[in-house]
Amino acid sequence: MGGDPGTGVRCDRLVELVTDYLEGALDEATAAQFDAHLAQCPGCDAYVDQMRQTAHQLSHVSLDGLSAATRARLLEAFGDMFG
Image 1: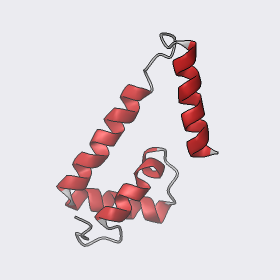
Image 2: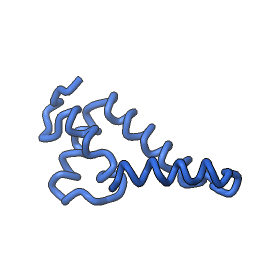
Image 3: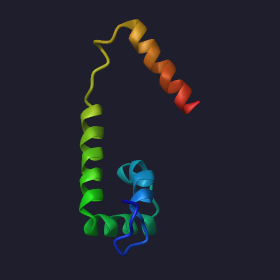
Image 4: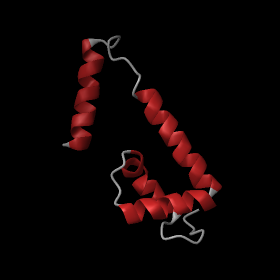
């Protein structure tokens, strides 16, 4: 855990970068290091795949069934997280 399988991105750093990676927001050099790490680290590859699947599933969640109170609590919680 946190090791470096021969690339410029360590496991612990990969976890920090995964959102930017999945959103295509990494610069070209960092994305290449990220991809190289995934090619050599089965644990991180599985982690990124799980994150990709989670993001895909969450993008299909309907908010229509939420009560007004629940919607307000969620908006408040995320508002606090993201300022």
